[in-house]
Picture 1 (cartoon, rainbow, N blue to C red):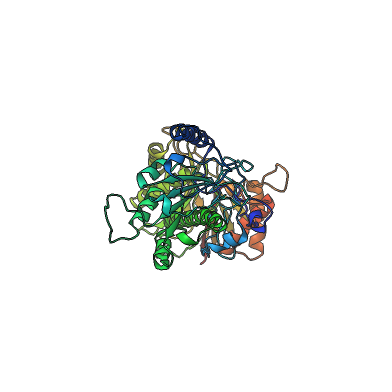
Picture 2: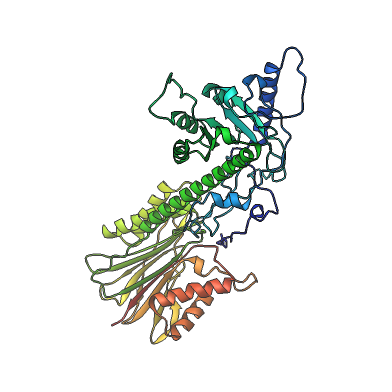
Length: 527
């Protein structure tokens, strides 16, 4: 497939104040929303007053007891994130946004799509969830974990950035918190004085309860509540994993609302940054693996000059379904091979590597021609996932004196030879056998060809000749390729410069990236 042009990062509308931000991390899917609303309804029925409660003006108290159940809030728009919130996280991601890694839909599980990495170093997650519910309203939900309701501050009319009530759930202990911690909870407000599970008294670890909550809710934003003046403990809570800390006796509605929004946004940024880093690491590991699978020619002691060019059709890949190799056996014979597995995905690339390694082993074991290709077909038949998978192969064995060669073609285009005394042309291909994997028991005759004293021999895959010419349906073809090489040779190009010019010109004629893998091998003999 064509290589997509890497997207440039646009400034999120949420940072410019023109749009609302994405749903918070941990937001519910449609199914979860229905399930959670049903659970909420059951909780209200179970905890409703038995003697007819008189309803007062709507207020949200942080010291609500479990009997209050889940406070009802009006459905709100997605949480807005000011520019201050986007940059407050300050997580440096220098060098992470490279062409090797493009991470989209980062929030397939949490409702966040990766919006890109800003040049200032802060990560912004600006897209809506993968379900595309960009216009749906999301109620921001807070889970308060506090064992002493009378000690918790009372905050009236806790609102989100749009002025809508924030839904609050209250848990007296971690057991209740675990029951109330559903996917629609966006932020947890935790009292650090709460005893850790199984600890009757003080514990050496003052943050044991926080560590427990972080293990319980790794995808949720967490705000830590601590006593006034205990900044050291609060700062340590942030180092352990909380998004921020607050003093109990210094809270007001505006401060807490802003802290909740900031914590949710920072958690989203942390998640996006972590996934970008993981994606970059995987890409680097894959690149090292693929680079290690590319062949290293074994031509020590040979007077022939070698050059190769490889361009996979897969986007950002280093390896495709094309494969090549060159080795010199102890008798001085130089063996060269190029092949193409149908398709250009990762499975085809893996099969191509297997065939190349098998060819090298068989060649060093003394096999060549029909015997080698017959054994190689058996390898293909055993390793392929589908009986319709086949591979074309061209093998050349050049005599030690360099003046003649044996040629075998298994459904592959014939090589091109160029000499100083005559124009470049294709080698004979009359005895071309079938591609490997098509006909059991097939034969591949070996043709003897004369090379001369000075020559250049180019092996290539069909990706070089199947590119289109302009906007029409006409393809370059072998004749067009021969004319192109003749002209480039007349311009004095040779070796790697010739191969590079050939691939670039074919791309230009095609009007962009080629859809198929391209591999070229060039062997030169200069007296």
